[in-house]
Length: 258
Image (cartoon, rainbow, N blue to C red; front, side):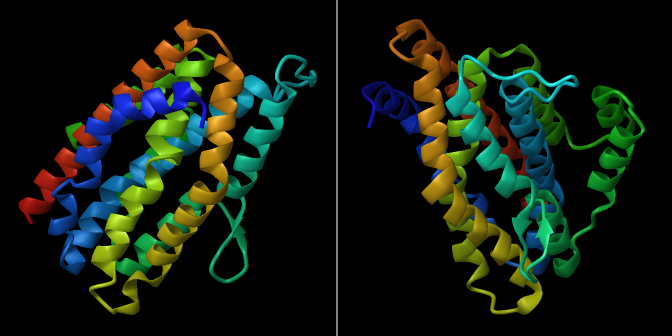
């Protein structure tokens, strides 16, 4: 492993430990807890796609007329490979669909309400300002803070910071977070979570074996031997884990109130 990757992982160890041992997992015990969790966590599933597509937009020449990427052709390959799976993966019935769509299907099967996330999507499709959408629907504050943090990163971060947020806040983190959820769901043998478990297992497999290593390769490519870039990447990664902790804390508080 690149020594600077190891240095960032060491920097993030306290936040990562808090996330992996968060008490939220102990509170996902009943169907109503699972549904409550899903109605909130789906916002993180949705905003992840905007984070990924922002990377694709920066590297892959999405404008028309098209232009070739001359500086980072390897980054184009890595990002497009990740987008292929996240935006058009193989679903449980062999169909092609995005991981967001897969998650929403799992919500329906589990009986979780899709009303709030559907309203957000409708607002986006109507070209409304995201802050206006979040304010008008009075979404829980921890959800609004998490989504706003993601989009501030998208609009304000440089390439290495955005790549670090993508790697350490999502691809490197998610498999271990989702293992905690899988352990809880496996205690309930009901098939109401069949699609949810498929989604979780799919993320564990893809992120562990493919997208995590691709994210590491991308960050190394962008930072190279520039220590200032590595330092900026570490700060951005730490900030995004703190944002995830606040989201987990907010969801836990809502679960405890059920």
